Length: 293
Image (tube, rainbow, N blue to C red; front, side, top):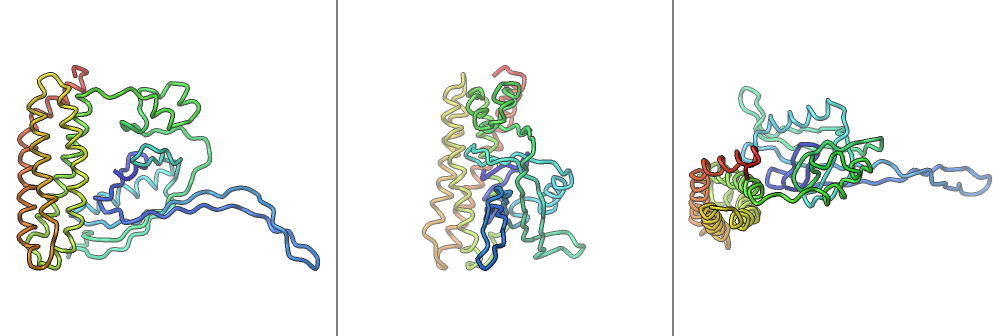
């Protein structure tokens, strides 16, 4: 995950293509007779962040994602902006959403578009509402750290997640990425070799990113009582996703079709294995919710 704005997650794998940051300072200009004017610093200006992203069905429902952004803007509320590393950047409001449709269906449904989202710093009183493990944890909302409005400190004071909670979290992350990879593969597998070459880097990056949560899943499962089956699941997922990634390198026009198909088979294998373990993982998640794990 690249960053979170309130509850809106931004991921490179879901179409983020760039972020621009602007910082300004306000200076007053005082005119002088027969001399150049003097500048006097008044204060720092408000920071701005500009996200560029591509919306496409391969990367998620374009209309749903655009609607989520517009609804957040229409609420006129400041939102906590936190990087995936856990660094709290500050409070920001959405001031502008620019949407340039690239393709639509015959009945006007959005199929592909380029979107820019402008965030402007909010300097007034603000209490972060973000609840996300590893960033700002709701368990410490009433602590002194909250009153001091220091989210970085809140993150450090947050209780350590149990092994079961980690397994559930890692499984969700890995599942999301594997599903996205499968969707991309299914959408482009019958395209011409040149198109496959252009899509391969995105698929390779997605499989690379999935390896981290899968490794975390395997390690956390080793600390769970009777978690051997989940640890074995993690090992098998790691093997399949690693195969999907390695199959995409090196690529050229002569081998891309075969290598893409091999990678897709590995992805489908990982998807089926994770789907087959859904009952087991759902049961573990229920135990976490009811605080029995």
